[in-house]
Length: 551
Image (cartoon, rainbow, N blue to C red; front, side, top):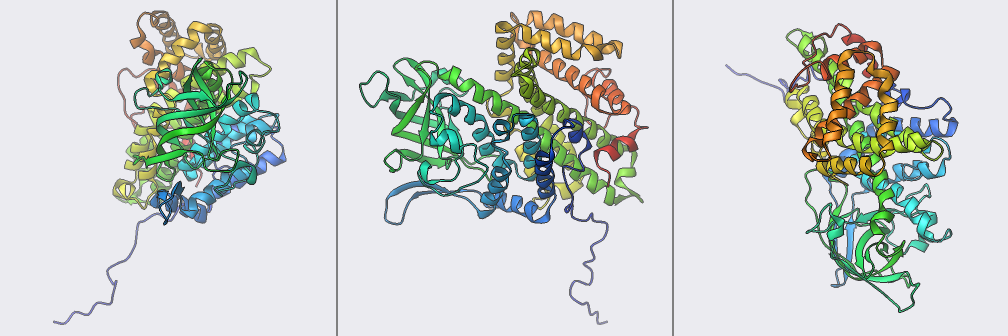
């Protein structure tokens, strides 16, 4: 018997979801919109809508994939043997950077007198859904700008052009460029988070007592975004640990002696370069007094920590959207996945977690905006930044895994977005202070500024009367906070309780009653460890899922 089959006769694609594209990630995000003030204005609203459209656009999504599939390459030498120490990026990376800097993700917090931090956080929340790798240089440029403004002349090129809404990828001296990006080089092998253990040495270039020009010599274990136009760095000067600006080019236009030893082979964040570098008597400008390096840099660290809370919340949102979209189109056992009770339980639980993370991150951004004129909000921001950075990042890896599992085997394949999100999930917890460091910072803040805890208590008090279990958790928290000075091992328990109580109070204000009540029952009334998808009552599943992603 002769059997004649045409090519691909058996290859019929059925029961597969369509591509998730051509949507606006901002206009479809009800929870994010709920955090924004009513008086944003046309310009800022347009920025959010434009970025939201890019996040859902097929071509921009493709650029995110291309930037990850083609990681940066170190070009140590030119073809004649001269050291050049340049990093080459795929064009898609530059296009993504152009989108972010063109919209002002690095600058809006400083150029907009009202709601600048809130809008900027919302933009970073959206940008990380498109490609998290470019969010690192955007975050550092944003965070470095106020430090540069404080210590440099008002007309200094770094002070002025680090807040220009443009992207100039050219490798040129700063005064030849339209805009500038700023990186960081703090970490050393022997110190890690303990920057006071840094061994990089700084010596003045002249004997003039007021000279701010130095030479730095030493090794940096991590340099973020090594093609930035300048780097904030710490070194040991005669007067102690000091903050410096190290430009890529010297004032005479020659290349500064920053030698890139290698690019780090990272788990995630692949589109962005992280390098190990040598300072071989590099030219640097002192920022602030000798010995005051930690004080000079603390504001930058605080601002990057806000980003480190916003970014995982954004990635959780993207993972949730991907999971719901898949479940809305994939049939299993005669029903759509989203109609299967177990899957609905998982998706509802993920939707609640995502909204709670969004509300917490954005509430901190509001507090930062209000800090200049409201002492209570200023104190709250100091504490809440730590809480949000710790807790949202602790939730993110398990959240990404659960969202990946919603896709089955398809979610484990690189053509899906899920592996990239899963690899990216740990980075913001580790960057700028891992979990234990963050908890110790909480202890220091409470010791030095006890009024911060009073501000926190003031903000969450209204929710405590909702159910007895909330007051009980609060009372236990107060006892543990009093003990943690002598028993710092309790700090993680304290931060977790503070985060959950704060998220609960925010859900009461901004979310539907059903979401609020399910959060209480699953996060406070359940004892012991729990996994996603273990909600006892999902009668409000349709309401929650339609709020999360009305397809």
